[in-house]
Amino acid sequence: MKNLLISLLGIAGGTHRAVGFAPQQQRRIATRPKVETSLSPPGYDFQKRSNYILNAADVNNDSDDTRNLSILVGDDSASFSIKEQKLGDWIKFSAATGAVLAAVAYLWFLPMGPNLGDEFLNSVQAILGTKSSDATIFGMLIAFAVSHSGLAGLRPYAEEIVGARAWRVVFAFVSLPLSLSCISYFVNHCHEGVQLWNFTSVPGLHTACWITDFISFLFLYPSTFNLLEVAAIEKPQLHLWETGVIRITRHPQAMGQIMWCGAHAAWLGTSTTVAACSVLVLHHLYSVWHGDRRLEYEHGESFQYIKETTSVIPFQAIIEGRQKLPDDYYTEFLRGPYALVVGGTIAAYFAHPWMMAGAALLRW
Image 1 (tube, rainbow, N blue to C red):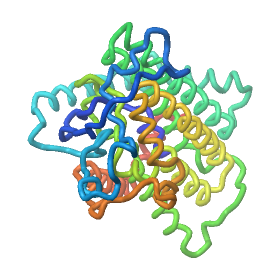
Image 2: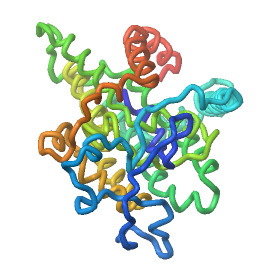
Image 3: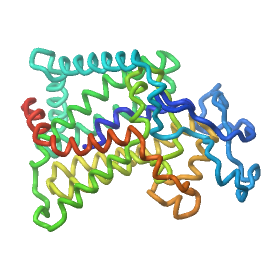
Image 4: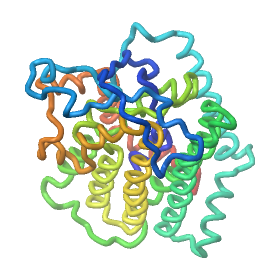
């Protein structure tokens, strides 16, 4: 469940300059001819973005200029510049986020509200014809997955009608309550159902699971850090990331979710946990195809270059020689957003008792 709440952010991504991030540069390589793909809708301008594609015939790979080339086709992951931040933007972010969370809490969870969360839970159980925790979480996550990916798929069309910011608000008001419902129900019932296995007495397993969980958070998709875009303070964009964790895997969110699910399933061993992890893994595997499709639609041949130099399976492109890590690669993780991830991950571990207490207040 670790990445479920974060996954509602979708691929927030965007222009060649991420909001609140350092300005991006590009490889200034001759633009290739316009190419229509099966993903391009009628009238779609394939070159609406500047596509500067690295062509092996254009650059001598043995030259010093190439070896030291730091100019990017895509965006620099997790790059953050405090000098570019505006206090007014973060005040707006705090106000907008607080307002949305308050609205969701009232409409979805609080007793004095319309209790839409209860209606959602009851509807899922009525459709399934059972109140068993494993079937319920399975159905709830299916509803979230269809809604989340469906709205993400409609994004390029909907934004043409209502605008990027308005569509982000619609997306949040659907995905946020559904994800919070799933998280709350899972926390309350993850120890229930059939006990399929119990490996908790295996020496070292808890440590191995904890380390796996911790690493999985380092695999967050870089767009997660674009908080001003997430909250629609700045216009949401579909970023084409190139550095950082993308060098390891082009779909870090999916890989991180698989790691998280594997660790939790191994430790808990219940049918409820297995049901939840099954949907989460399948949803994120689908997102691999869906995410590539959306990036190709938005970025065209620029994405093709990133695709050729990265891999879905972690480290595959590096092993095959398609991705060469720079000597100072580690510095791409020594950035403010990752400091917050590390601190937040450790804090979340110790906050588990309070998370369970908070979820129990729903009495689901």
